[in-house]
Every structure is written in structure tokens, then in C-alpha cells.
Image 1 (cartoon, rainbow, N blue to C red):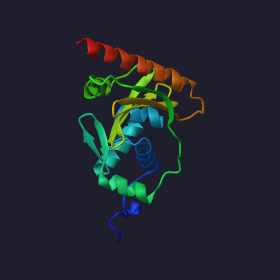
Image 2 (image 1 turned 60 degrees about the vertical axis):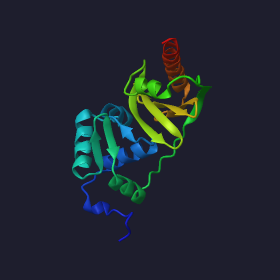
Image 3 (image 1 turned 90 degrees about the horizontal axis):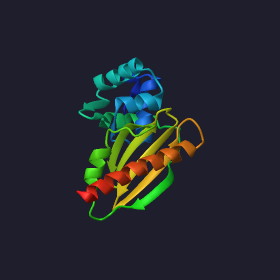
Length: 188
């Protein structure tokens, strides 16, 4: 049998389990939270707890201090059952960051925080930089802030509607908060 193949029939996986894995893959999250997934999947907390418990017991995900991560087994499952969703991130705002600002300090301050209508979803670290993600309280939009080579880019993505107006409002709110953080960091 091929090393990248996982026989899903041998696992106790339900459609919701696979949906959760696809969402984590689609959002490119290296770390995700319970609350963020609950909003993104729009399911009851008890149902999400059962899904996560099932995935944990089969070593498809691992629990960490600040959320959950996919295991190599999850990545093999995703290769064998690719997602059909193809939503795209739309660039909403972009700016250069002051060169003397500690981007890591800004990122540490933003992680796991809620802002107005934005609720923490998770983050990822890739060659493209560090991306922090939030989902709106209604679960209709995802806002991503990517920090890479002295730049900040904010993207929006609709989940259940095709109207980016709310995402644009939320991105401006996030940018305002980041600007305050930068200003207070520069003054200290």
C-alpha cells in the first residue's frame, strides 16, 4: 500500500469529521480553536466536542495549549478525500509596517483576541508569513491578517454569502486596532 494512502473505511469517521478537516485545510490553519470551529461549522458545542474527541482518539488531530493541530494522519486523509470547496481570499487592505516595530510583539498581542464583530479562528505559519484569522460573529466572513517581510495584508472571504461589505467593515476595524498597537509600541 502507498505510504500516503489511508484507508478511511478502517477509521470511525463521519461526514462532519471530514468537513472539519476540510475547513482546517481550506483555511490553511496550523492551529485552530474550538470556538472558531464552532462558528465556522455552525454546529452545537456538544456536537463539535464529539467530533474533536473522535478525531483525537484516532490521532487525526492533537490538542495543544492554544488549540488543535492536524497530524500527518489527517493530511493523508485529506489527500485521499479532497475538498470540493474553492472559496478565495479577496485582498481588502495592505500597508507597510514601520521598520522598527516588533512584528512578533504585534502578533502575540493579536492572537486569541476578539475585536468588535471578529472572533478568533486560528493561525498559520508558512513560507508566505504568519497569518492570523478571525471569523465574524454571524459566521459569514473570515478576515485574515498576513504579516510578511514588513508588510501587513488583510484579506476577506465570504463563507455563506457573497457580500464582502461586512468583511470590509471588519477589516477596517482590525486595521484600526493594529494601528493603535503600532502607535503604542512606537511610544514605548
